[in-house]
Image (cartoon, rainbow, N blue to C red; front, side, top):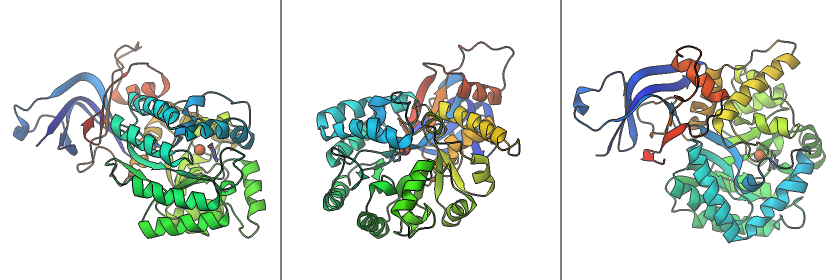
Length: 419
Ligand code: GUN
Ligand code: FE
C-alpha cells in the first residue's frame, strides 16, 4: 500500500463560510485516497515517512469548472470588445488554428503544465470543435496530472468560415471522439454544445439523446450577456427563457454545468435549483467582456449550486486563487449596485466555491473528507511580509489577494504527486 503523509498548516473549506484548520497537522492518504486529517500522527502510522512542509499551508487543490483550452494562446488579448464581437474577432479565429495537431500539442502541453503550476488539479474544460486536437488535449492533461472533464465543442452554425461543422460532421465526429477517448484514466468526456446560437435544433436534440443514453455530463453557457440573450430569444421564439433552449433537448439536469448565469431572473434561477444544474461563476471574464455582475449571493441564498471558473480566455488568469478574490470583488460590486442590500462573499466562502463546490461536480465530498482522492496544494507564503503573526485564516485571505510567484510548492492530484 502506498502511503502519503503530509505535515503542515492544513486548511479546508468543507461548507460555505466554514474553514477547518489543523496547524501542525497530518493529512494522510492510502493509495491516493484520504483517510483523514489528524492533529498528531496516529499510532498505526508510527515510523512511516512524513513529508514535513513546516508552517506552509496545505490546502485543497482548486477545481476550475469553466475554461477554454484553445483560447489559452490569446489570454489577455482582445479585451476591448463585448462578448459576441470578441468571439468573432478573437476567439473563433484563434480556435480555428487547432485544426493543426502540431499547434495543439505545443499549446496544450504548456497549458496542462501551467494548470498544475497554479495548483489546479480538476477542470471542466472546452476544447475546440476539432476531434484530433481534443484527444491531444486530453492526453496532455492526463500526462501532467490534471483530472476532470473535457468536451469536444459542437457548433454547426454561426461559427464563420473556419470554425463550423455541418450537422452531420458534428454528430459523426462526436461519436468517433467518444470511441477514441475511452482509455484515459483521469480525463473523461463531457457533452459540449458551445451555446444555443452555435447549435441547430437537430444537433441539440442529438446531443441531448447522446448524453441521456450514455449517462454523460453536459456543459454550456447560459445568460452571460444581454445581446446574447436577445439573440437566443430571436432564435427560439418557442422558448420563453434561455434555459428552456437546453431543457427542451434534455440538456438540463443534475449533470449539467452552465457557465456565467449573470442575467438569470428568478424563474431561471428556480429552474436551475429544481433541476440541480450547477452555475459556474466567472467573475474575471464577466468584467473583461463587460457582460455584467453576477448575483452570486442571490444564487447561493436561493439554493442554486454555484462553483467558480476562470473562463480563460475571457478571463485573464489561470489561477483559481485570483478567481476567488475576483469573486469577492464582484460580489462587492453587486452589493453596491443592489443598494447595499446583498452581502458580499467572504474569503472563506470564495475559497469554498473554488474548491469543495467544484469538487462536488466530480462526485467528491466536501473538504479533505475521508474517501476523497487526495487533491492538495502546498502554498508557501513565508516570503510575504507580515504586520503581525497571522492566523491560517488570515493567511488564506492574503494568498487569494496577493499574487506570489513560486508560492505553489507541491501539488497532489488524484493521489499522485504532480509537482
Ligand atoms: N459563449 C459562447 N462561447 C463562448 C466563449 O468562448 N467564451 C465565453 N465567455 N462565452 C461564450
Ligand atoms: Fe466560456
